[in-house]
Length: 243
Ligand code: HEC
Image (cartoon, rainbow, N blue to C red; front, side):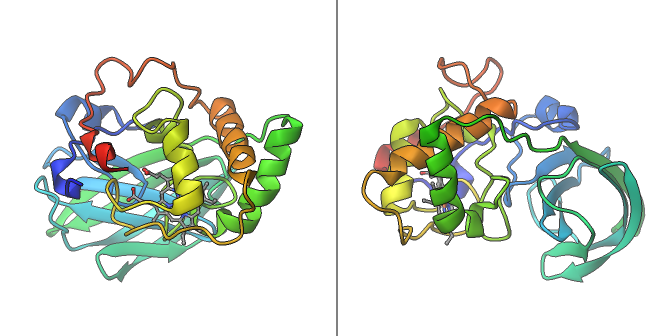
């Protein structure tokens, strides 16, 4: 398996990602959205249940010291939060869940200079589910959501599954999702570490979980094309040969 650094990852981002995409290959380490500022710092932003996370890195992906605050518009309600340094990240508690519709303005100081960045995400939509997908939702909530989040947008311990990397037709086909659900996965896309073999799925339930994940992806803009990554989204995904 290739190391993370060897996998050229081009992010597909909702909302504010145009600068990062125009710039080339930018890796999100923690499943967030990335934007690049004029002085080439990379700001990754993620919404968790109960708070937000921010990582500031230089153009070589080395963490930078930063401080600042965020103004959040969560489902139309405004709140200001102070970001606290927390290892290599900045974080804050907030009245927020990963499923919310969010607009965020970050006002940071990076290397003594003011830097601002904006991010947004739509509310997660739960569609009308087939009987199989509804069964999969129950199993997902019992076994997977503690890591991948009830909204499938990830957490501090696992990546979002509502993501271009995992949509239909991407390098992560049904086989990869079924394999992860039954056996776990080696870390190769993010900095969360390995996914352990999930405990508690009965044989066959992985197909229900897959149906639920596909239904959620389709309802939230990750329907996929069935024809590989979209044009302009090069992705060396040969790391998957080892699955
Ligand atoms: C203990 C936390 C944890 C649990 C529980 C968990 N996962 Fe994961 N999962 C992870 C991590 C961490 C990764 C990221 C691995 C990487 O870096 O690519 C991951 C990755 C994945 C991937 C991508 C796999 C690949 O090969 O690229 C899929 C699909 C997935 N998980 C589905 C599930 C499903 C379905 C369940 C429930 C049956 C589940 N996960 C339960 C932590 C977890």
